[in-house]
Image (cartoon, rainbow, N blue to C red):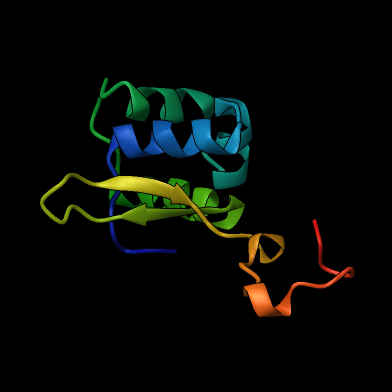
Length: 97
């Protein structure tokens, strides 16, 4: 589990990017749906361990969290092996998608 926290906005962006419901993320993070919802809506303070569990669940599902580098913190989907870039000289009938 990561020791770095994520923001509620990053959580919502990650969940949307993955196409996961709050219920699915809560189940994967082993937290209640209400806890996840309250975190995303900034309704109450969420324990760092809980935020870490949510982050780990989203990372395991396929996102990377980007730290603020002056342009704001963000989220991106991890590249899948099938998304690998093939050099032009390596293109052939077998890998022509």
